[in-house]
Structure formats: C-alpha cells, structure tokens
Image: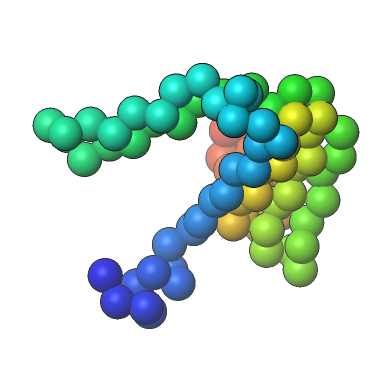
Amino acid sequence: MNFKEKRKQKGFSIQLVSKNYLDVVSISEKADKVLIEGRLGELKEINFIDNMVLVATYSMGVLRLDITLSDIQSLIEKKSS
C-alpha cells in the first residue's frame, strides 16, 4: 500500500496507562485478523482535534479515531431512517 492509499484509510490509536488494562492481543495466523481487548475505565472527556480526530479520554487510557463529526452524524441519520 502506497502513501496515498494509506492516507485514505482511517486510523486509530489506543493508549493505556498500564499494560495491566490490556486483556487480549491476538494475531491470527490463519486469517489476516487482529483482536485487541482491554479496559479504558470511566469516560472523562470527548473532544475533536481539527474536526478530524475523535479523542475519547478515559480514566485508564485514551482512544483516538480518525473520524469527523459529520461522519458520525451521517451514520446516525442512516440508522434513523
């Protein structure tokens, strides 16, 4: 995948305050799949950076998603109709 194709993809990051909150990291050898499970704790704050990155801050970590508010609103409207 070249740089231009990667830019079209949406990204994410998960930052935990301790590895003790990470429950499962599984990389399948048969299928091209990855599973990450853990605990983030209590939701403290939700913000957007430049209306491009959703940042959800929890008591035990931070979740970042490349998604805009308009993306979220469009999906909610589709579900409502």
